[in-house]
Image (tube, rainbow, N blue to C red):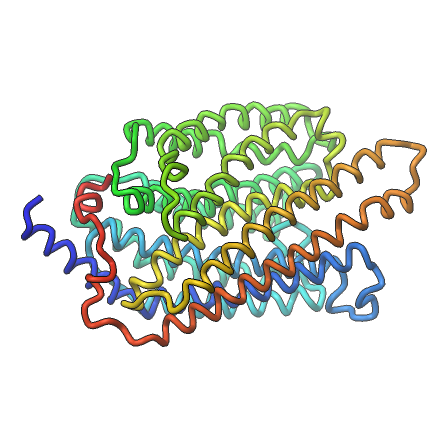
Length: 473
């Protein structure tokens, strides 16, 4: 690559980041607000698990509603806003052109978050659905779907207007996720709300949607982020990149069928959970390829961005193995309908969140044109996140295992089970409190960064190997 080409690449990068600053900063700020609020709701929910009398006279914050509130804030508040910000930025970077249709991002983001707020009010007053990760009131769901489509318009323009004909794994995962979410959401809305299917088909559709919300929407964006960050952080091309396409297509082919593992022992045909288990085993092929491609993260632990990415990637791989192992009927008989499933959900959320944290720590300074004001706050957030997620997952898993073995023992009473589980739930609540503190530090730090005066020559601060980006490898 000639020096002239390198200079052009740096100029284009600066122009791209400048064009997206306001839009992506808004989405990131909204995501962090919902992350903190969702963490507080999750903390309250855990406290109610081991102290059922807590807020028992407050109808707006009963256990079931608090559970729905924290799930909705995390998925449609934190995850949706953050993943959209990262997806747009990645497509702009890989496409090599500035943001077009910035007003669509702002308008769609405004209506998305307004609809979410309205939905949360509806959940609090009891106007919610009975489906996990899909509790938004029926009158809010069409608004959310349209708002997402409006936000995605600039992403489509970035994809169709890219300056390079060749594509890269980051683009595959991000574009697939942006197209699959409206399909998943609209199918669930029609089959569960507008023209609801009957009988056992309802839990089948509900678990299919809940599983694919992570498998085909959120986690692909996280993987796309890792594929982009690895060459930037290590200065090396991805090893065995030719296999990346197999990992991508195996996720799309097999990832959508694993939701039936939640129905083991339920009133559904036996082939549904069996198909889910077989799909999970086949999905190991995807995890092997992704590990082969991205294992360079483990060999390069320089910088906080890499540390966040390593933890998130490790959680992603571990989550895949745990999902397959506990799809076995013998283990599922113990862990089904216990706190262990909450631990599995937290492991998936940890994988997504830590990878997105890595992406935000890489993205935000380039939007602001300045470095993060405090390295101490970044380290504090990292430690709080690692310790918080690790302790939370272990505590919930232990509580779930004790709960499951107790429920399978006819001689043990419910009171005895609750007594054995309570200490672990208290540990989980403490871990969740630590996560809230860490996330609050990130939100405060982001505000400080956005208020920092941009450097006159930010390219001096952010020296990147432009050849890696130009070659899409």
